Length: 136
Image (tube, rainbow, N blue to C red; front, top):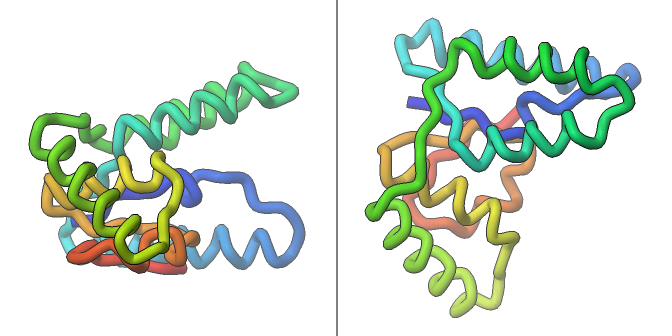
């Protein structure tokens, strides 16, 4: 099962951006064709809300975000994820390789629900034990 990180939904500019968007779309198609459910987390939903708040044309981006989220189940932060968050954060601090709390929150929800993570920012998640990454 694959959880889509916010980076999957970000806009990509220029030729390199179009290649990244195409690679992301292909990876998502491959995961879906493999019969895996596509989900995201409530934290990714919140990050997309920030994108809408900051954009020049909020109505257009609001529709685009709704279109992206419509087929996805949204995983919430629960007790299992909270314990996973504490474990991951402590582990990363002990390694001396902390990452942003939002990334740890996303990873904790993925792990608590048995999902891998589809992202273009794999370096943010590499030191999290047990998290399967689908990179593009």
